[in-house]
Length: 458
Ligand code: ADQ
Image (tube, rainbow, N blue to C red; front, top):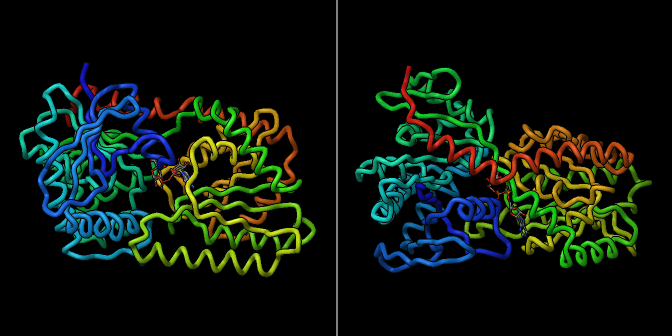
């Protein structure tokens, strides 16, 4: 059987508070076997290409250190200051610097130089995310004939936004060197087709084959899931149960509304606080019946826009608490910390409402974790932004436009008043989807497409 070689910017350290991508890939690699290659997260004075191999959590990892300039230009620069904001429709935050683009290309060449010798002819290679758009093309330049796939974890922006990126034509042409390109949703897939067709003259055959010059690539919409069954079980075990009791106890009879996010401007945290504030102002009678618990550990602290969102949110939480708090009640509990998955499962289960309000999100795994952690006999209600990729699947959530404080306020009220039978009906439908299209389903769907017969253009 072919081995799977996963290549991504960061390689999971295993255990603890992992991001959505890390949890998903560890699960896929455990099932299929192979190597996970990427940056160690450490910086070295001069790039050496030295690979550290480790076996952790049932997965073999191979990592390299990068130079400070690589980290500044490739990671903090092009990935986090150019591509991330632009691909989340935040052209106002995107920085366009040739040095960033140059460092991004150089670092991808370094990844390709280092990983190419580890790849055997029968292996299938699966490259992850926007840090690595050019990697497949670089591997082809080094003679690799393997099946190579790419999966994008963030949205693909509309053509009219992408044309602002000077390197966009090169990046899209480089993507055509993959055999399969995966997106979470039809919407992101269609935006990619629009750009390739209208800007570069590509042709679309049927629904999923894109041809540009002498290359034909298969496009798949393949929504990522979670380890749903395991997460649901975790939510009933000791750590989660104790957490759940402690959190419910601390709310002294009030309904908990929970938000869990990396502290990122794409997650709509400011809009969430404003929606909650609107709810408090419009429904003073419900005021002391609820508490919003927002868990948001800081991320990417070296980038200015992340420092700004942190201080904006602290200011907003302070203002709302200042205006509404009573001697025995604070409306927002805002915690800047990461927690283990066990603890998070308990917090989700303790919460009557899961409030997930990204302005744009490739998928959003918190929405799925919230559903998986609920008590089937007394489930909470998911409020979900229609601009999260997850909204394409999770149509039984209360779907809202996060830019509208009124819609958020109305949804909170509807969720808090929802009768048990409706809560159970909605939750059951959501849970069936989360269980069926879990992370193993995602991994299989993508790798099946990757290992299928090579595509021929019509
Ligand atoms: P993220 O932007 O990181 O992922 P998301 O999908 O919600 O967003 O995953 C976040 C993960 O981090 C979840 O598993 C969550 O439990 C965990 N997490 C968040 N806050 C935490 C905390 N305080 N403590 C511990 N864990 C915490 C990117 C894309 C998403 C896409 C995923 C996977 O931006 O759109 O869903 O990749 O493709």
